[in-house]
Image 1 (cartoon, helix red, strand yellow):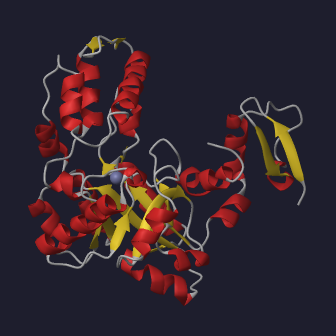
Image 2 (cartoon, rainbow, N blue to C red):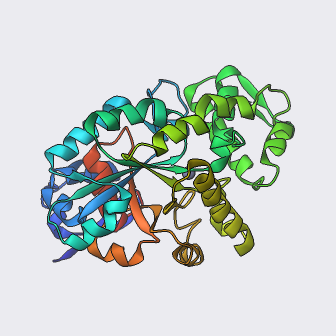
Amino acid sequence: MGIKDIKCSFNTINIPRLYLIRIKKGDKMNKETIINLLPNLKIIEKQTCGIGTIFALHRVAKIEENEILYNQFLKVSEEYLEETILKLKKKNYKFISLDELEVTIKSGSKEKFAVFTFDDGYKDNYTTAYPIFKKYNIPFTIYITNDFLNKKAVLWWYIIEDIIKNNEIVVTSKMEKFSCRTKKEKENTFVILRNNIFTFGGKDLAKKIKNYLPNYKFSFSEKCDELCMDWEELKVLANDPLVTIGAHTVSHPAMNTLTLEEMEKEVLDGKKELEEKLKISIDHFAYPYGTTRQVNEREFNFLKNNDFKTSTTTRANNIRELNIDSSEQLPRILLKENFSLERNMFLIPFLRRYIKV
Ligand SMILES: [Zn+2]
């Protein structure tokens, strides 16, 4: 297969010539041109689909106008989820649980599989997603961050969204002033505040954010009541054979910032509390954030040696046979509402081989 270099306005990329047959001579070669043309090529689906897919989601809730994009990307609508299920059915995907993954891969079945997983423990997993999976009798997994359930999570990304939406100017304790009048200004302010909050580190985060934004009234615990599942709701889910509960650390740290001792506490204390409260075995784990920035060999080795059947990342790829020998680092496909299922499942993993998208 010949390789053709394309000078794009955004980057220089190498894409096998085969995929470019539909690009007409003289077409402007930019990212959108390529992305818009590629989904039509069935060959990409065939080459990228592997033997199945583990999907990563966070929330199922109504997509609202004027939402900060960073937060909007955490959810898909009920309609999108149902549409996804129906599309996968049409493509003859079989819906399985994480417990069935190893057997399914080893069976060598030609039937492709889909696994749905949710991270963190948002309330709408219970109120909105659960009835949809019940309706179609489809298994799914929820990876729990214990602080969500114990109402200790610092959901700063929703707090700063509220502040930005309700104020025309946001002023911090460092006397920074950010205009939040237009949609663009709101998005920009969110990114700046987010980047600043990232530098605070995990310890005493709630206190540091309160000190940083002293002019605004907000309550982290009220935000948890609004958005996080409670133990009673989780117990209902844990008692349903359709639902697998997995661990996702106690407080959702970037694991590469932890000492081994801290990592042990985050992973094993989280698992232990879930097992004690739910009276079930917790056999599956998802790395918080889960990209190459936060999770690598050290974290993989730790999980491999600590009694979990599978651990999932957020590295965008489908599952191949070879993944069964590395069940401590399974890739997942993040579902995004503004992308088609095909773009999420096939195009993004495909393009990631060649360009940053
Ligand atoms: Zn998470």
